[in-house]
Length: 461
Ligand SMILES: *[C@@H]1O[C@H](CO)[C@@H](O)[C@H](O)[C@H]1NC(C)=O
Ligand SMILES: *[C@@H]1O[C@H](CO)[C@@H](O)[C@H](O)[C@H]1NC(C)=O
Ligand SMILES: *[C@@H]1O[C@H](CO)[C@@H](O)[C@H](O)[C@H]1NC(C)=O
Ligand SMILES: *[C@@H]1O[C@H](CO)[C@@H](O)[C@H](O)[C@H]1NC(C)=O
Ligand SMILES: *[C@@H]1O[C@H](CO)[C@@H](O)[C@H](O)[C@H]1NC(C)=O
Ligand SMILES: *[C@@H]1O[C@H](CO)[C@@H](O)[C@H](O)[C@H]1NC(C)=O
Ligand SMILES: *[C@@H]1O[C@H](CO)[C@@H](O)[C@H](O)[C@H]1NC(C)=O
Image (tube, rainbow, N blue to C red; front, side, top):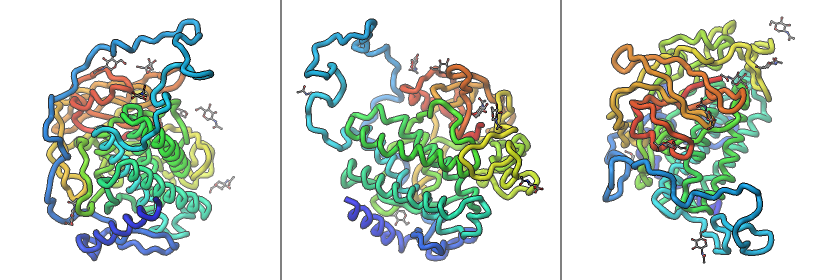
C-alpha cells in the first residue's frame, strides 16, 4: 500500500499548488532543498477566506455533556488466590479477553469514535512527515553543527520522517477512502535548536493524544496496530528531548490526553488543507499562554522574563527562543549541570521549574478562527476560571488561580507525588484553566472538557 499513499502525497501537493500563494509572505522564506531532502513548496499562514466553519457534527447531538454513572455492574472480577476461576476455552488459555475467541481480525475503525480518533492521528502523522523533512531541508550543515547535531543525527531524523510515511499509510488503510489528506503547515521556528524543541513538544501531543483514546477504541484490532506506531512516536519524543539537551525521561508514566487537547494544539500549525479533506469533530479550546514558560536554552531558566517574550510566538506549543546572550545560554556551556548541548542524558543544576514557582498566565477568549483554512472556531462551555489543572503522569492536580486582569492571572506550581519520590509535575505537559476542580482519573479525563476555559503546554523539569 505504500505506492498509493505516496501518490496521495503528490496529489495533495498538486492540488495545493494553485490555492497557496506562489510567493511566500515576508518572514517565511521559500524553502530550498539544499540537502537532497524533499520539502513542501510552501510553509506559511493561510491568507484566504474559509468556505465552511466549525467542527463536523452528526445530525443529532443528544445532551450537553456525559452524565457520570456508578461503576459498570459487571466490573467485579477479583482473584484473591491467583487460581483461574472460569472454565478454560482451551489448554493454556485463561478465560476472558477481547478478540480471543477465534474471530477473524478486522483492521478497520468500528465507530464514529474510532473514525474521528484515527483521523486525528492521521492529521498528526502528516504534520510530522512534513515537519521532520522541513527542518532537514531548511537548515544548513553549519546550522546543524552549531546546534550540536551532526550528519548521523540528521540521518536519524530522516529515518523518523520515513517512519511517518509508514504510519500515515497504516492509519489511512484503517480509515478507508475518507482518510484526511496531507495539508500545508505554518511553523514557528527560526533555528535548528527551536525546530528540535518544537519537535519534542509536537511529538508530546502526538503521543499523549493517542494514549488518551487508545484504550477507549471499539476496534481492538485498530488499537493493536496503533500501539505499534505510537511506541515509535514515543521514542521520537524522547530523542528530540535528548537533541534539545533536556532530561530524556523525567517521569515514571507518560500522560494521556483527550483528543480535543491534541487537536487544539495541532490545528494551530495547519494553514491549508486540500479541497475535500475530511473535517474533524473535536473541540478547539482557546489558547492558554504561560508567560514565563521556562526557556530551555537558559542556564538559569528561572530568569525567563514574565512577559511571554521568550516563547517564539503565541501559539500553544511554540518553542523557547534560542537567540539569548551566550553567557546566559546553556548551549555549548561545557560545565556539567549547565550544559544543554544534545546528549544521551543531561542533569540540570538549576531546574526548568519547581514546586512553588509562580506561573504567569494569559488566555484568549473563545470565538477565534483557527486551524486548516481558519475554518475551525475556538470554544468553551466553562464559566469564570478558578483553577489551573496540571495533567501529568497518572494525575490531574489543581492549583488555585488568582485573576489579575482581563484574561490574565497567576498560580503556583503545586507539589505532589505519584508513587514514592516521583514528583507529578515534570517534563513537557498540558495545563488547563478550569472553572471547577473536578476529580478525574486517566480513564475519565475527557469528563473535564466541559469545564476547560483554555489549554496550554508547560515545560516542567
Ligand atoms: C467473540 O468475541 C467478540 C468480542 O471480541 C464478540 O463480539 C463475539 O460475539 C464473540 N463471538 C462468539 C461466537 O462468541
Ligand atoms: C482551503 O482553501 C483553499 C484555497 O482557498 C481551497 O482550495 C481548499 O478547498 C480549502 N480547503 C478546504 C478543506 O476547505
Ligand atoms: C570549558 O570552557 C572554558 C571557557 O570557554 C575553557 O576555558 C575550558 O578549557 C573548557 N573546559 C573543557 C574541559 O573543555
Ligand atoms: C544528577 O542529579 C541527581 C538528582 O537530581 C543528583 O543527585 C546527582 O548528583 C546528579 N549527578 C550529576 C553527575 O550531576
Ligand atoms: C497521583 O496518582 C496516584 C495514582 O492514582 C495516586 O496514588 C497519588 O495519590 C496521586 N497523587 C496526588 C497528589 O493526587
Ligand atoms: C523532575 O525530574 C528530574 C529528573 O529526573 C528531577 O531531578 C527533578 O527533581 C524532578 N522534578 C520534580 C518537581 O519532581
Ligand atoms: C472519574 O473516575 C474516578 C474514579 O477513578 C471517580 O472517582 C470520579 O468521580 C470520576 N469523575 C467523573 C467526573 O466522572
